[in-house]
Image 1 (cartoon, one colour):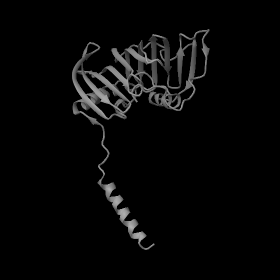
Image 2 (cartoon, rainbow, N blue to C red):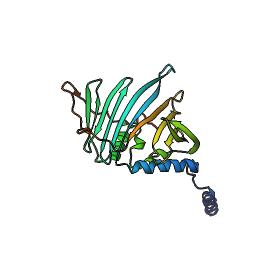
Image 3 (cartoon, rainbow, N blue to C red):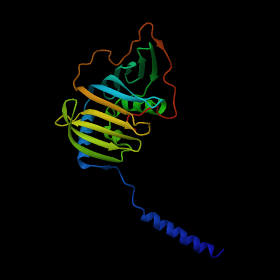
Length: 257
């Protein structure tokens, strides 16, 4: 027994020395020019009290047979900080409205004649967190809507590169590319005084064929004239109210996470 204690002391000393010798955990490896372009966009977005845009969205769906099919939609979005949100999604297999007024959120599938009501937190950030964590819903382009876009965008990023100046939505943009464990994504940021996001492309590396999600933000309005009642929803007489999406253990789909 006397020999055991010195031996344990040596082992403890070796383990402590090894722990001290381990290099500190590395942060994401992001090119300086890419980091600067992204920071400029995030700062610009955060300063906008109202943000309205239209996006042309295409998404690849992989069927059990392995065949990949593309669906196309148009997204109209209006954000009024800190507690108003409107989204209308139309196109292939979808006609949906989502509205939030700081108290309740309503999701209406107009093509199906149903809608659901959710008691919501008092901010857009809180709403998006609730939808993701409890209901497995990720709002389209939600990383551009939160109060800290860069924190949302860079979460889980491993590598970021600047690919130079390329066109998106007819605008000269800084083209960035990022790598994560489960997705690769690209972002085009308009050059000039208004560094707006003009295109986002995401490849899901966890699904067969790496299906792609692409959104081109074609129109922006930073000073929109908002119609009265935009953030409220009046169901049609024959619309049927249903329960909100049942809670899930994990998000059903994520645009970038």
